Length: 145
Image (tube, rainbow, N blue to C red):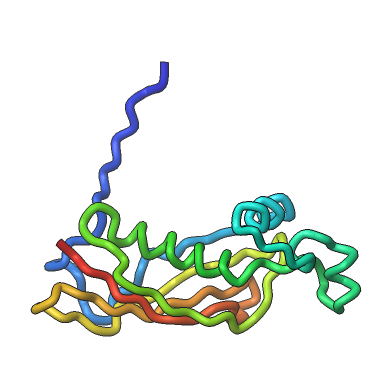
C-alpha cells in the first residue's frame, strides 16, 4: 500500500510576492536516453539530438539538448513557483548556448514587475550550465488567483 503524499506548499500567494524576488531554482541533468525519448515524443527527427556519431560529424561534442527541452525545464520551474495559486500566462525564451547530456542545467529567475490590478507578475528567466554559461534566456508572465 502506498502512503498518502501530502504537499505542504501550494505555491506563492500574490500578496507575498516582492519585486526582485528570486524564483526557486530548478536543476536538471539531461541524459542520452532523456534526449532520445524527448525527440520521440515531440517528433523531432533531427539526428543531432539522438545520434552521437552524426552529432560529432557536425562538430558537436555530443548529442544536443533540444531547444524545446530547455523551454520545458524553464516552464517546469515556473509551474513550481505558481503551483495551485496561479498559472503561467506566457513565456518567451531564446536559446543562447548548447548543452549536452551530463551538463548540469540550472533554471533561475526573478520578479521584475508586479501589476496589482491584473494580478500579473513578470519574471526574467534563464538557464545556465555548470560553468555558468547561458543556455537560454527569456521572460514570463504569471497570473495569480
